[in-house]
Image (cartoon, rainbow, N blue to C red; front, side):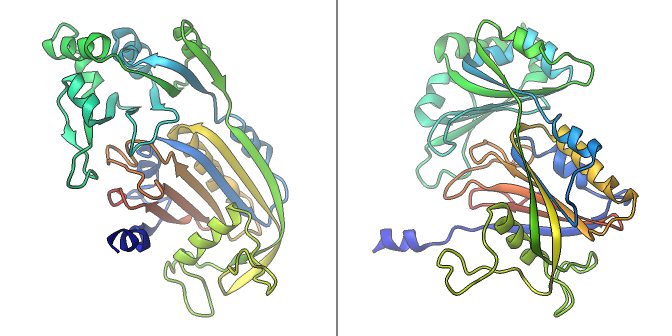
Length: 363
């Protein structure tokens, strides 16, 4: 009975909504983007649009590259050469590939130079490093979190602390992972990372881009000043959030009696737009690239447009050790951590941030 009861339990999900204006000096839009490091899918939807501008299309095509390195020893990420070349001279992110955060050893390198290890109990004890129990371990602690400040370590490579960590990664408990890496440095050559890891199996990838035009799309009516909506006048932010999920999943919104897959329909009040443009980018996408996309979408209204609003949605890797900043992240039953901007033609915006059961409240 206890097992059945647990299976019936619905895990906690949290959605935070707020509104502001891009011209407000207290606006948090840049901070939210810049501290959400591990992004695998970015989508934007523009109602009343049949074709992208050249500026926006070019920006979409420049969201890469990122890299896949197979069997990379962990000690390569703490060398003086790596720290000097990539961490101190740009924004570098790394994330273990094809690892399950709740079960496997997982590693992430944050752009600020923090190396985070999520280790199972046996591996943690074998490394001999100092860490803390995972906040989502439950009564029986099976996962531990180790956080290493590489910028601090690089100040004194002769210190006992650096020697102990280096010895642990090289000799005591050598660890190898498949890694995804991305690096942003406006003045660098894209081939730098390829040449640096040339002795390993490294591949350069570009994010996959899917462009589509949705016809006769029923869209919710929104008012920028009303997050909670107004009966018979405008829809709530939560209703828009659900509707976007259905649109991105290509769900039929007609709610016809012979549709046995989904009975979901567009919230009311709504309006039908002749065309809407949907762009989805999938890969390992750095926050800097997303900031540029948001800025370009804000400039969409520099000239008069029929669209009353556009959206920019970002989904994080389900098995990353963190969601925002250094907030610990777990999978449990979903692993979701995502955010969505609704950009209005008066430069007001809604910001929606969602996390799953094993997460802290969004910032």
